[in-house]
Image 1 (tube, one colour):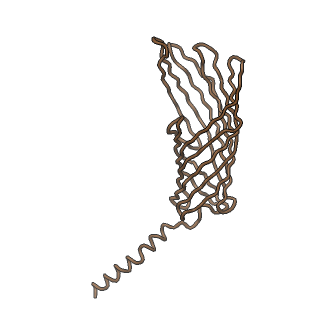
Image 2 (tube, helix red, strand yellow; image 1 turned 90 degrees about the vertical axis):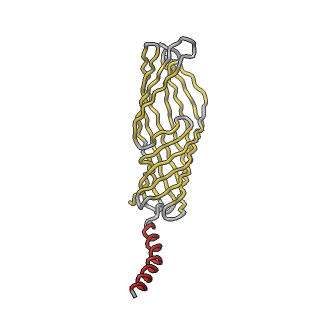
Image 3 (cartoon, one colour; image 1 turned 45 degrees about the vertical axis):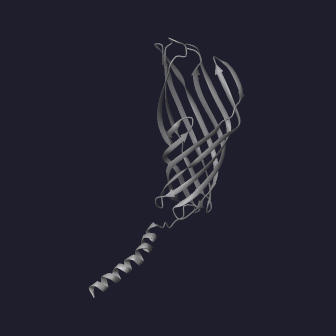
Length: 240
């Protein structure tokens, strides 16, 4: 009799355990339910051909140093060091089931210096800004995984400073344009609140113009930018 009871108990465990484990894995509240607020990039990384792998989050500080040998034989080497701080909040709201509306604001301030040949030239500070409004549609593949494509239109202004010649006046370059941005994120939910997203992102400028100013003299011309990058990040999904 004890052997039979143990056998019945083992069969019952094998029968009910997959169901109970599956029930524990299921999430009750859908990611795309209307009225949810999503903060999609509390922390993460961005990979692109220009800057390589860089931290991408709502706020941060970064320092970069570049050393270059002289082009002319016997000339001094130069080293450029820059520091940047930025604020980049990003949020979306599901106004109805599946349909989200949101945006991103990014403001960055950069300063630095160039050293070479026993001299140090301070780089004037620059400010770059991006304002983007977007709309998205979430397609669930289950209670934990889904595809979240989003498309946005906005405006960007990017500043940079350089010295054409040692001891000369700095040249300030400003690029301004309308911006079209599309990202295709795959979302994985750890639980009801926390999730991870990853996917490609493409940004292209429309009607861009670059202006260079040196010692009060300015020149301008049309310009455009195409950027393809990949993003991975962590966020939260909050119910209002």
